[in-house]
Amino acid sequence: MIGKLKGLIDSYGEDYVILDVGGVGYQVHCASRTLQALPSPGGAAVLSIETYVREDAIKLFGFRSDHEREWFRLLQTVQGVGAKVALAVLGTLPPTDLANAVALRDKAAVARTPGVGPKVAERIVSELKDKAPGFADVDPAVVQLSGAIDNNRAPRPVTDAISALVNLGYGQPQAAAAIAAASRSAGEKAETAQLIRLGLKELSK
Image (cartoon, rainbow, N blue to C red; front, top):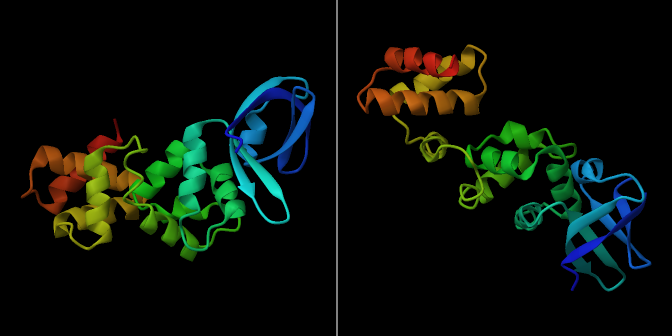
């Protein structure tokens, strides 16, 4: 099983790179973001590799980090997501942004991926929500609040305040983060108007 390849870029295809390792050219399929980050032909590159062995073929998928490869594996645990869709998602969202989107249940961010509709985006954020926080760099309080909103367990003033900020043009994740910070400073019994005021103050920082 191949886990990593280090060599020189030989050439590029539409969705792959040929990596020359000691005179052997390996065809490695990569997400568009990964391909764009690699050097010109002749340049040195190191790729973490996921090896797929099928009856009719052996296919290599390459990633700039083990972290990115881990997300490639995680995405394929979701029903209806294969290697092609997983690569497309990673081509749209870098691993940290993807982790944040899943942690915050931001289906819209995932759905920006070409070929990923609302239903698949919904499944990705739902089925991976328990695995994402470990990879995300967002405030755990915001993750907790997003989960509470998702499960209709958030206090009414909080959901109303977030809704008000969304109506003002802020994105759901931004609004949730601002209101999470506002409710932390105002306390559990804060009313909607106070949360909106504090949330706007947070957004203007």
